[in-house]
Length: 231
Image (cartoon, rainbow, N blue to C red; front, side):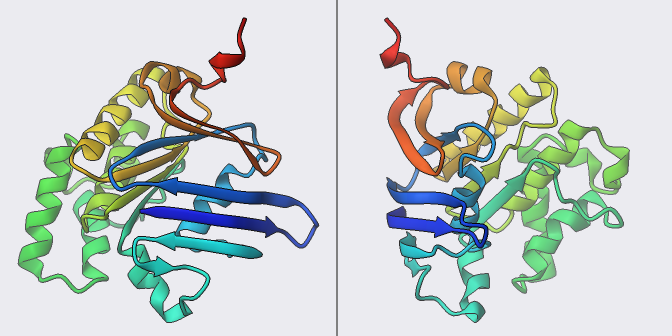
């Protein structure tokens, strides 16, 4: 579960990126986070994996109370989370297998467990035949699939996706969404920040809209825009 209670975030330049965020996301939900650039979406996302620290308020991710945990506990929090970025963040000198395996090796899984899990997640994203390939030999869509495989390698309870289709053509973006929705159906919570109105409108899920640091809409099975205001 993800719980924000009266969370404020003010940066040193006096910009308020989170103005009284009070949000609960239950295990297994799929939530889009939408809004214009600079609205506060990335801050919301980054506070979940403690890349950013709130100025005040409470954030709880599963059993972790983020305003109370020590720096040495952050790696344990992040084991509960898988994070997918717009720019993939793959390690260029490692093969596909090694990129995915890295997420498991840092938590000291045995070589046998690593091999088994990497093969399973690569099969899930449809790239089981690319184990020995390097990232620069893959298309953008394939690189994003590998990034997703790496993010779910350690079976996180929450998948955070920050503009995962932002650099992809519509057909490839649709393929990526198929994978993310499949992961969600297996019980993983998905929180996805996006500017892609077509995806939000066609693949209906809960929508949280942020503008100027405020949550202005929280709608079950909403569209990219608030359709309830249309006459």
